[in-house]
Amino acid sequence: MNGDHIHLEFAVSGNNFASAGSASEEVKGTLKKLGIPSCDIRRVAIAMYEGEINMVIHAGGGVATADIYLDRIEIVLADKGKGIPDVELAMTPGWSTAPEDIRALGFGAGMGLPNMKKYTDEFVIESEVGVGTTVRMKIFFS
Amino acid sequence: MTVNELADILNARIDVLADGEREISSGYCGDFLSNVMGKAPADSAWFTVMSNVNVCAVASLTDCAVVVLCEGTEPDPALTERAKQNEVNLILTGLPVYEAAVETSRHLG
Image (cartoon, rainbow over all chains, first blue to last red; front, side, top):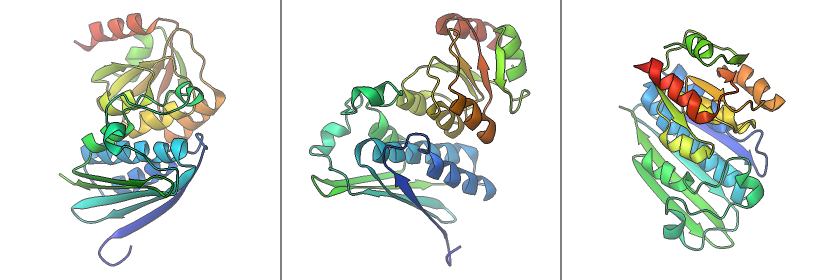
């Protein structure tokens, strides 16, 4: 607990699909303990997991933070990966650059970013080629 | 319909049973994990042939009631292990995805 809110921070390791999702699981568990409605927890879990997976597949990992307030959660996913040349294109449902071996695991449907936008109340993505990508998401509790 | 009842209906082998009395209210068929994340309703039975460890994370995070591995697919040992840890119901059937879903739908009413 940090004053008026709970701050959680996770290192997401790159190319480790076995541990991918552990940050989302922990946030989900925390929200459950706080008595947040399950429909909200589901939205948070889905949006955060998609972000985690993106960092694992495309960016060699990164840092995920979650700040939980009384009325909302703010999630920031920051990586120092290769960046996204055309963010608008990357937001297109079904568009993916995931390689074949990643698709064989069931990823790479091109629905990650669209899902993150769909399940959040605020979604901002900033990316610079060669520098990295930062995604900021807010979900208000019902 | 409960997970236990679905397992009977599909003549399924139980791999991990965290809560056999959990109610199933819907279903979803798919192998692309992001499609499942985006479209599977909560409390659904998820029919898939995908058997790696990531299936557990997706099932848990989407709050799906049970994963039904179809077509005689065997789960990776890591999937079984993770499902036990995360308390995700996981059952196995020899039925094709379509037939398993149709059979489930008939009983969902």
